[in-house]
Length: 200
Ligand SMILES: [Zn+2]
Image (cartoon, rainbow, N blue to C red):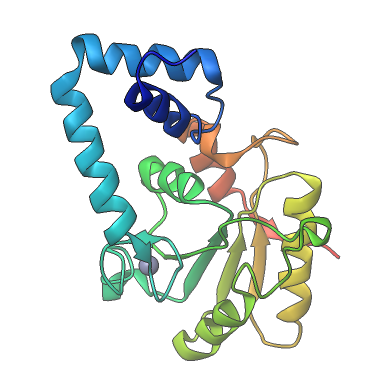
């Protein structure tokens, strides 16, 4: 239907975003071209810089601009408590709740053999190394309360067997099948305070 190959290319590119189909991509492209040129230019610049410059933190695997993310750079956060989450949005939700003062490990997913995601893909060896190197005494397995999240938590707990690390799991308030990133701060804080040892 092309009236402009450049517009077509923009629409096609926008479709790489999650939940954006042809119609939405067209609406976005037309909006940027009609009324949002300066925003569009800024967006293009940010996209470029982020795609080139954002890497994974060497310690926690979260997105970072430098070798260590701002949380891992703070020595006081390495206080022996390590919280394992599935995604950066889970980490953000916990940080915004404001109660937790330990360090993190971001799996960037969960175990999913059917999709070819094994322990290596989510960084389990790196996680276990940190337990040794930092003298972790408590690991909070804050993976999502989904089938995959539970399976991932149990796998990690099994790998820590005999290592003298207290393993806890978030308690009440987190809806089964839900995602931490969408839980309000109050509920999340309560779930944290009510965490309990992971049962076999
Ligand atoms: Zn980090």
